[in-house]
Length: 274
Image (tube, rainbow, N blue to C red; front, side, top):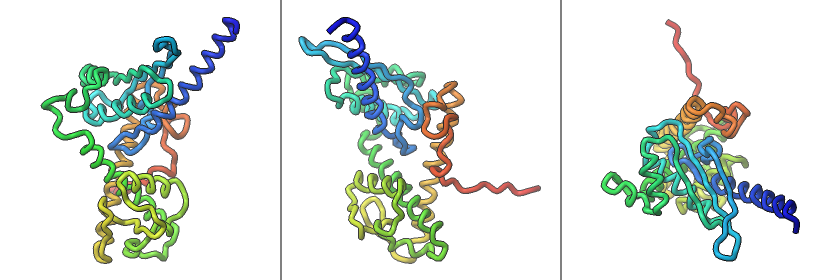
């Protein structure tokens, strides 16, 4: 193989592997916003290099992450950065993975902990108030609640004759096919909840349903959780676009970085006239 041909082959391999790195990063979710860090625009850059591990060729990846503000919660920041490193490290042939968080007030501490594989508690020591997995579980439960509410609200909007109090008996088979239902199934699986067609949708994180008289309040609480998640995601996307010029093009949605119109079902705001 000529030098030119070898160079082109190497460049082609780098392009393919860079795509694999981005696909891996797309599996990493902001725990509070319940969206992939790629779609949020949190991936600042990805670089892939060919290295050598003894006699065998290998690869190294360098990933830089960014967040909407310098004071975003350090535990969320560490969780995303750590998950990103784990996801990229799982790619076949990847020998070295460096993930660094830019422009955060704890960047130096987090980056040093990631480089040393010190873990969350090893990085923050006495400042770590709870285990990282406990934190992850809290937000998985919230994500499940929000996902169930999206599906049930979609059903109520599609069928005006369906009473709100009747959604307590709605099963997975009753839901309309689409991305909202797919998201709910993934979140139920993450919590170990059954995905049988006859499984009730409106349940708590342990799979317990609600009595008929409890359903309206349970649905309103679920709606409050979903609105909070969607509102925070909308706010953080805007902050990122303000902080980093051009970052909107890295966010999922339109070219200007705005969210898809059918994704965030925020309640309309009515301004009272004075």
